[in-house]
Length: 142
Image 1 (cartoon, rainbow, N blue to C red):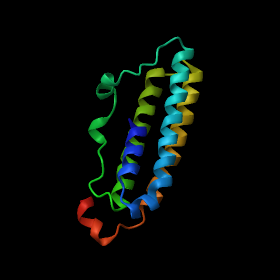
Image 2 (image 1 turned 90 degrees about the vertical axis):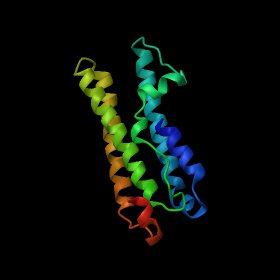
Image 3 (image 1 turned 180 degrees about the horizontal axis):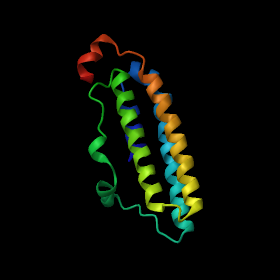
Image 4 (image 1 turned 120 degrees about the vertical axis):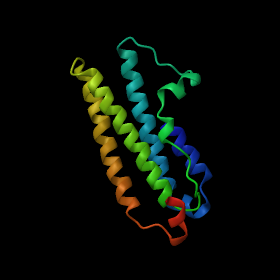
């Protein structure tokens, strides 16, 4: 879900915002895709089945906290939403760590690695969003 959000947002941005954010959104989609691949590989190693049924997605994805930006011309709202997407991933990793509860050290290490990377990514996003929005973006963000 997070990969699709990053790619869809990048594809809809106005030219000025696309120039500023295209690299960040591409990096974000790669990060989430690589994370999903690592988790899917581990599920398979444990004898589970990775489901690709899109009808299950609304039940498993945090879609209530993910939306497209209202202002596709500016960077600030996109960064705020990217913060929410990344925070959502961090929350999911924390839930997975609770579920595992030390019973599978390999899975625990993978999720801890993903959590560490997501936390670093969140710091990058928050640093970038510290750049004040353009005056015309102030209303859209509120």
